[in-house]
Length: 85
Image (tube, rainbow, N blue to C red; front, side, top):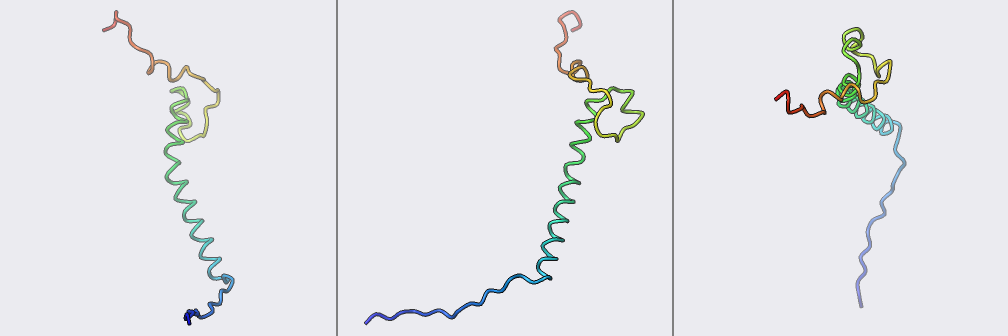
């Protein structure tokens, strides 16, 4: 005759308010961490798109007032001509 193994019944309860509050606080801290980590990248990219005059007048504004397109990055991405080297 084969023996069967019986396990004790485990009672699972829904998480209480304390657990829900803890999870909410953990998620808020993680979200704040993400903002702190990504903010410098956003500022670097938005500053690189601004003309020089706008950088010095309002350095922490979000996006450039007039969208410059590629004109801001063009001098740094073009190759120098053979005459200047």
